[in-house]
Length: 84
Image (cartoon, rainbow, N blue to C red; front, top):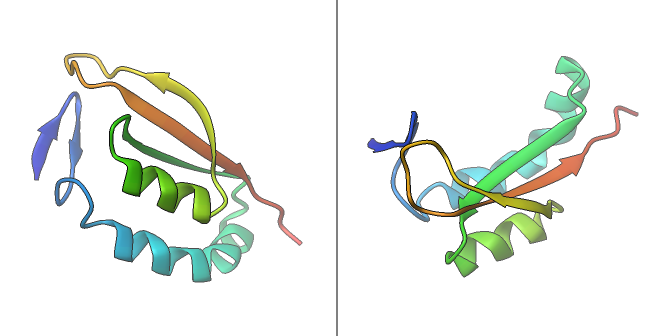
C-alpha cells in the first residue's frame, strides 16, 4: 500500500477497477442490506480511465479537492442509491 495523505491508497492507480466493476453487480444487495443511500468514488484528476469507469458505473462528478499533506488534486464522484 502506498501512503496517500492521511489515508492509504491500495494497489496504486488502476488495479482496483476490476473489483469496482464487480461491486456494481452486488451494489443493490449491499445497499438494501445496509441501508446505504450514497456511493462515493475518488480518482486523481488526470486519470481519464478511472474517470470513465466511475461514470460508466453511474457516478457523477461532484467536486475537486485536495487531501491534507498531498499536493495531488482529486476528483470526487457520487451516486444516490434507492433502496427499493
